[in-house]
Image (cartoon, rainbow, N blue to C red):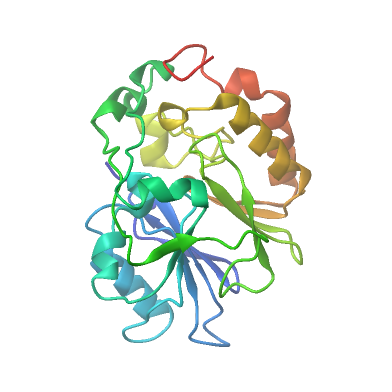
Length: 267
């Protein structure tokens, strides 16, 4: 399963680069015109490590290695190439402390729920990997004060719901937001919309979201920041008035357009 945007990168800001790996976005934070130092946010799908290295080399330098990897959460499409990359990169990985059980081999995520939507991706979700991974030698909890190592000016925000330890990243100076899957800009349950990357504000991917009350609170928290540009884990980046209107609309209509009517994780 892939999209028309797979393999395409976009500098949404001089130091924020969004790269699409099949159906999921990675983010690289660092300005190549000023420095060769950068941080990688999430690591995409399985078996994409060579592709990711090529992308980083093209943007920065030969054999470019990030200072660190920050994980918004540990679902398979966000950590798919992480273990393979760490075979060559001796670098730290940071995640929320509540996400660590899934990154140290102690717990698996709940399986996908096919009953949350009629879309084909939702129907296929029980087949998606839900197992945890073990990167114990590399992973550690993010600082409790909200700072992000090697990312001055940015702070992490706990945005649970999709997973217990899900985070988003925000820079107050220019109101740039790296969302993860707290909300997305494509209807992730629909195969057609995923493949075509039809832009549409949506809540977190329904089939893997296990706490809808927390997910709603997380979206409200992010909307209150009044971001000016947002890079979500799925979908095309959104900015300006379009982002403001759509995010406000999502908050006002969350139960109708985001939360499924039924499902094993729906109260």
